[in-house]
Length: 359
Image 1 (cartoon, rainbow, N blue to C red):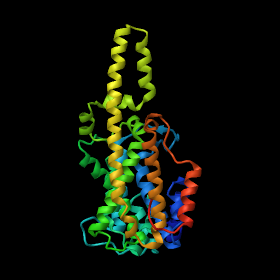
Image 2 (image 1 turned 180 degrees about the vertical axis):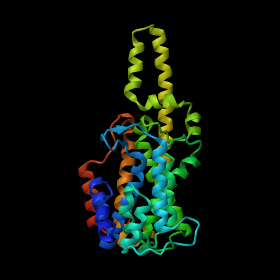
Image 3 (image 1 turned 60 degrees about the vertical axis):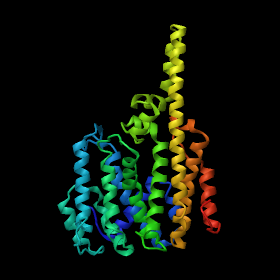
Image 4 (image 1 turned 135 degrees about the vertical axis):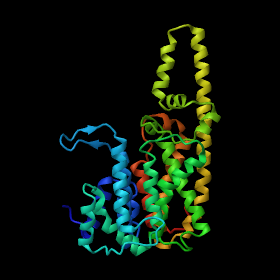
């Protein structure tokens, strides 16, 4: 049976953060030691929760990857939710379990109730930071609600539906992080909530635009159906335009036939390309609005945590700017990243320069 002592739990969180090679890890180094540790623990929780849905399943005997089983993934997520409730309490209930993060025996008893739940090792550390930084429970459970929607992905009808998803998978983590960083106004004050929600949407919408082709190949379309229809594109046309190589093959296949029919087909495809370009342009413009609305959050964060937030914000915004400059990268099949040099320059700026503003 795995050890569930607090010290072992903290080390497991640090190890997962290191192995994940997350772009967030360098930003953690800009925090005071106690907040850096808390962010490593929070990251381990969010990463494990996300991986329950995103990572493939493997046969325990052969080690071979097995087909996606919706029921199995839901069972894993439900078990993880129940384990979390046993430590933090249920949403909507004022009663919270009286568990000391240092009480290894208590966590071993919880582990006996949830055999096979790999994330149990993170719970003592998570309980510690929830108590220490008064992290609200709701955002931690909202993240689970968000990743659950990815088990059986369904198209979002409207942008409002997309926003709900962004809040579940991104803004929820933002509120938990803000509890760790500290805010100059109450965490759920109007000004903090407004800026935090804008930031969550800006970051997640950047991810959605960057990963459109990868998500489509995985059976997921996050752009609202209403906006695809307004652009005059079906899901299939949208997918074909995302996969630019396949789109070009269609043009070539038609080239050897009737020249008039080929010309008509090319003109029709160009119409779809123009519609696609207009759709993406509108999405990028929308993203800029949310970035602008998120900027006040910088001044609402405690001074000793602003550098980390600034580095994260600048990193996401730099990816967004790269998409704006070269929209063709979105359909290239290559993941849009910042160069190592750009990452280092951003880190060095936030490590050495005074924190006056985000940009």
